[in-house]
Image (cartoon, rainbow, N blue to C red):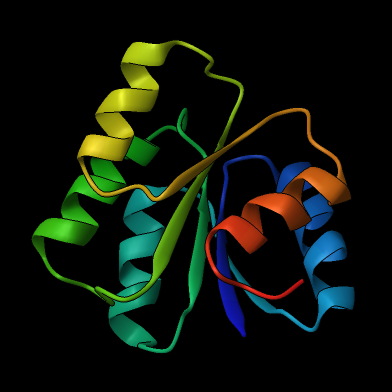
Length: 122
């Protein structure tokens, strides 16, 4: 399994990578939504994107909209990983192609549960 971690925080990217690697997940990283789209255009084999909502250059909502509009890796699941608890943002992201939400701060168990909801054995 291969995941793309998209977050402007290097700490969060490293934290997610350290949680996913022992699960057998190979990880790539991007620092914002624009960088993520470039990575997805170059590599077409991701199963999961873990996408922060609040980032500079291109935020997570803009990224998921572009991802689905451009039909980049249409089978890939998108999990928003964010501190944003506002139902308006959650609904908007889900309406635009996100598949699940993981609220920061999170634990390895909550990440594992969300992955199972998306159909990934953890």
